[in-house]
Length: 108
Length: 143
Image 1 (cartoon, rainbow over the protein chains, first blue to last red):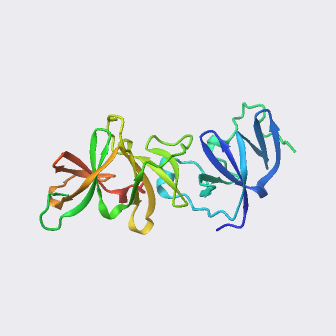
Image 2 (cartoon, chains in turn brown, orange; image 1 turned 90 degrees about the vertical axis):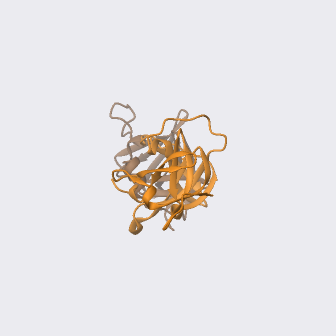
Image 3 (spheres, each protein chain N blue to C red; image 1 turned 135 degrees about the vertical axis):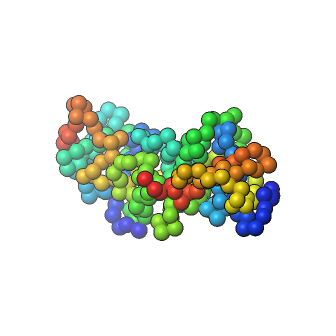
């Protein structure tokens, strides 16, 4: 069990978690939420909550084989399966494209 | 239980996956439950339906039909998720397999299984309902 706290957010069809300590700021942008990270940003459909004491399971070989994206592990929060990600190595579905005018924008 | 018996017969769970029958070694089965709700993972291969929650743990869920290259069948009346052990014994992990139905337990003699090249489908064997693809989930973790 990890003592770290995480922001749990929804983006697309999945729920994601990122360590609260790696988030520099939060801002609403229309219907979406911007999470500013060091050198990157995530725009979430919604922030679902903050999780503390979440048990994070390292990604297994099966997950890595069929979803070859970087992730720190998997967890369950409030009955939801969650992908735990590292701010320094975001999986492609969470990364903004370079063409996005909001790419890398600091929001705090 | 169908008996294909003989010496050293192994017990399998017979599953319907699309138009294909699959035989999963019973010792790799942990639980059979009504199909779990799955959250798709963007960018995942077709075999990975997504993630589910099972007994408070995150569970990658695979589409058994896609895994064995089965054509889709009729809309299943009672789809199931088979919670199973996958990967080699040293790196065993729990996965979910979505199937159209769990049919019965069968016994197959090792000699009845016609081996296939190494992979998740270890071979094929005759059962009362037709021919079944015999699964080997130990191969799932291999790249």
